[in-house]
Length: 404
Image 1: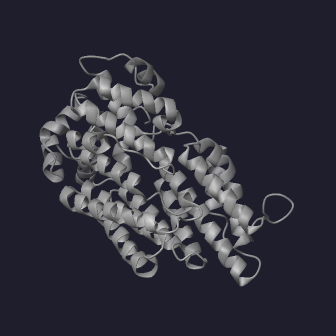
Image 2: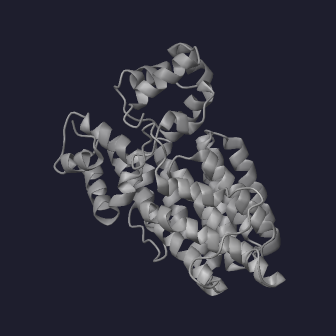
Image 3: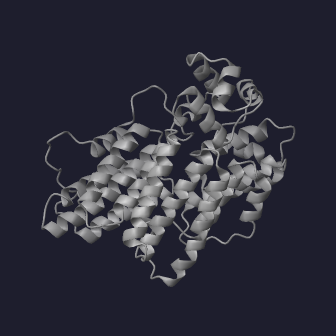
C-alpha cells in the first residue's frame, strides 16, 4: 500500500517470514531495539544499510520493504495507459516488424540522438509524466533506425536504441517497476553489443548495477560494476568519455560496498574516483556529457556526502558538503540528493531548523524530485513526529502529504 508505514510493512513481512522480532534481528544483524522502534512507529525511517540488512533477513527485495515511490503509488488498479504504452514499447510483440518512425519520414541520426538526449533531460528534471508520453515514440524511432540503412547506420541506430532502452530502464526503476527495468536494460545491453558505441555496455552495466541494488543483490551489483569498470579502463580509459563511464562504475561499486556495511572499502573506492576527476580537466570534454555519465568532482563529492549520511556520520557529511561548488553540468537529480542528505545530516544532529532550510531550498528548485523521494518523506515524517516543529515544516509536510 502506498501510505503504509515502514514499521507496518516491516511487521507484515516479518510475520510472513514466520519470524519473531528477535529472530529477524538475529538474521539481519540489526538490533532488536531498532526493529521494535520501527514496528511501534517510534522510528519513521532507517538508513539504507539497515534497510538492506532487514531485507536480507526477511528474504525480500529492498523495494518490498521501501514500498512505492511517493510520486507513483500503486493502488491495485490497472496501470495507467501511459505506462502500458511504455511497457509495450520496451517489450514489443515477438517477431513483429519494427514500427514506422514518428512523422512521415524517417528521422536522421542526429535528430534521433537529439530526441534521445531530450528524453534524458526530462528524466533528470523528474518530468516522469511527460517522459512516459514521449518515450514510446523515442524507442520506436530508435528501433526503426536500428533495422534499416547501411551497416554503419544500423550500428548507430542500435546505439540510439540502447540509450533509449536504458532510459526506459531508469524510468521503470523510478516508478518502482523493477522487473520492467531489468527487461529494458537486458534489451539495451543486446543493442549495445550491435552498436557503434564501445562505451555503451559499460554505461548500461551501471544501470543494471543500480537495479540490482534495488533488488538487494548488493554483491552482484558490486561485482558487475567492478568488472565493467575494468573493461572500460582497459579499452577506453584514456578518453574523457571512457574516464567518465569508468568513474561512474567505481562510484556504483562503492555504493554497493557501503550498503553491504563495508564503509572503509567504499571510502577507498570513492577517494580513487575523486582523484581521477583531476584528469578530466586535461582531456577534451564529451560532446554531450549527460549522454555519457555525470561523473565529475561534484558528483563524487555528492556521493561521499550520501555515504557518510547513510553510515551515521552527519558531521563528516556536512563538512564534505560545506562550500561545495557544483559544476554546471550537475543534473537536478544529483542536486536533489545532496540537499536531501544535508537535511538528513542536520536532522540526525538534532538541528531541525537546518533540515527544514535544506528541504525548503529543495522544494523551490526541484519540487518534482522532492515528491519522488522516499527519503524526503522519511525525513519530514521524523521531523513532524519530533518534539519541535520549526517554521516552514508544516508547508513541506502538507506538500508531501505527511501532515495529519
